[in-house]
Length: 131
Image (cartoon, rainbow, N blue to C red; front, top):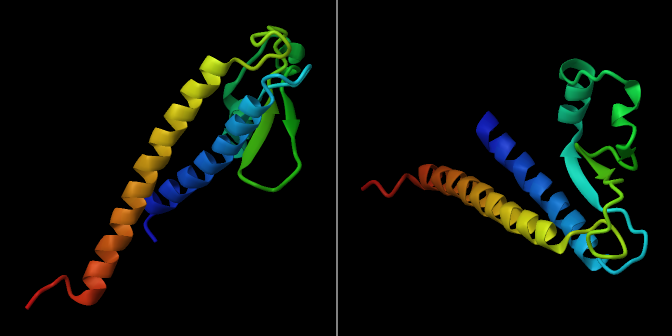
């Protein structure tokens, strides 16, 4: 399988997880003291923290609490900002809806490209319609 298709399939997986987290944030907009969640790629986070991300103080990243509940490629991180965007917690409905729209576009793009790839494979297997 070409590397580009594998990347697109990973993007589809990410979009699915991201969509679930956005839905959870939106559904908890009225829940007192709920902490907004977000999804990041584990490998990217690990690489950035270990090699590229430099801080003056080791406490600069202490507000990121990473949930290691499963072995997926993604991490759920909690937004510990104290801004009470909704009045009872830090979920901002405009931000969540914007991220949902962006995530939907990513998913549609990736699913269309993966579908085209498999359609081309199917066409080649059937002979491409050559007479």
